[in-house]
Image 1 (spheres, rainbow, N blue to C red):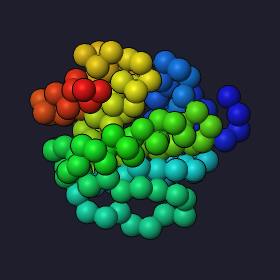
Image 2 (cartoon, rainbow, N blue to C red; image 1 turned 90 degrees about the vertical axis):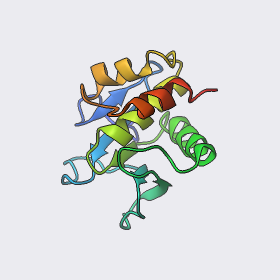
Image 3 (tube, one colour; image 1 turned 135 degrees about the vertical axis):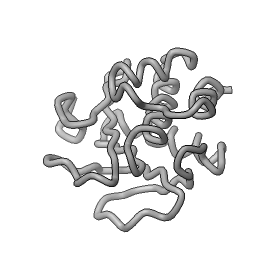
Length: 144
């Protein structure tokens, strides 16, 4: 691991099986102390406020699914690639439903079987991650 990635002890950081580290967080809470992301993916129903680091907005209404499956795959694929060398953050309002779903999709990209990805994220990030049945189904079919 180099200094441009998260530490496994940083708040909200999920370690994927490959060793990539991705921070999930709730935007309704203050920015955690410590390093800031190099790149962030914000999962919101409206455009997020400006941040001083590179970021992408994925239109994703609360409790639902991304508005564009194609755009979600591209943005999350880019985040997964960059997580090998950069501090990547994935965040929504509460940091559980949309963030947990996106983290589970990153786990699928990292080689976790799709039918095990939600459990992986719940064990290693937040026990309440991925809040709705359709979010769980989205993860199971993410790689289709």
